[in-house]
Image 1 (cartoon, rainbow, N blue to C red):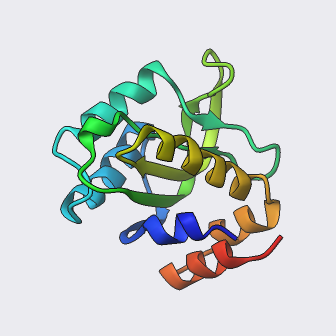
Image 2: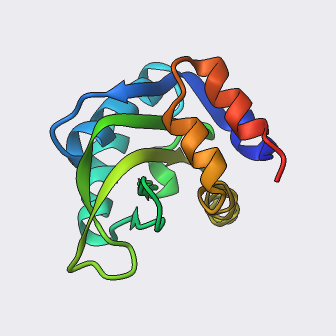
Length: 156
């Protein structure tokens, strides 16, 4: 389905069934994995959390699960990468379209991209995945990294 996502997805930054208290904790966990793998600078995590507070990325999907796509500015990125988490229990993110509302999020994609155009393109790729309920369900039921790969390879 999305070769672009598969190409950038860092296996060590895929956390399945993560048990976190809030949106900040999952951004911090995913960002730490990207940092340890050499994708982002030390400043990335705080920058992503700060950006999320000002420009929220919670996305209601209209199904059983909602998503968020936190990211930050390109100067905090060393090389392009993508982290993904499914959450054991949903956490609140502010709604991307209506920031005064919260969205209970169970699926998080954390973007680390070093080109502005690449951010827009990857957001479109992820939006395409999120608009396919069967792929979202497959991601949410993934037990291991290969399940995530299989879910993302599903043809529409």
